[in-house]
Length: 189
Image 1 (tube, helix red, strand yellow):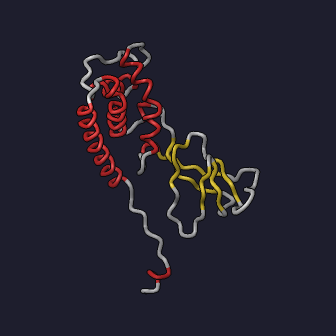
Image 2: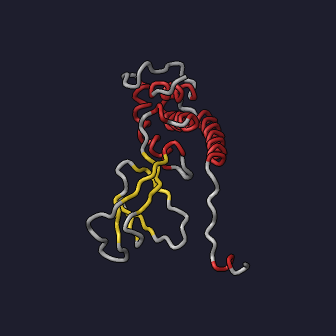
Image 3: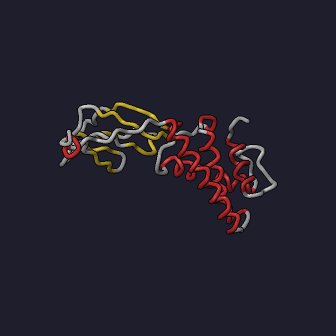
């Protein structure tokens, strides 16, 4: 089965036990409006969750902005326009601060950045993200469509299981990050 926006909406509605799906994501029905109302914010929130959805990870080398920071730092970098969240590298002595859509640091003159990109193409979603997003949409729409708190709790439990599967999947696909060897550890040798 290929992933589509209408398919995502229908998966969310199926989680709710709604017999009425949507034929297309723009249809003007109660279920269509409910899905559209929560889709964008829920998608972005799921991408920004703790941990990282590997399908959305991007890398970019940033050049400093033309303006130097007013104080404390030597460089400022603008975050990529579509970045949802950045991953700070595990490098000893790295001094970063993120303020608004800027990174302030003394490290330069370029900065290598790993970040979660705002992926909007549903066909590019990891299958577990697709499922988790549908479940989160169902949780958001549950009160409006079913008026059932117990249904919401059941879907939330399923979402937690999906997230555990995603975390396990990421663990197998991501090599461990070596810890920074401090002077106390090196003194042993």
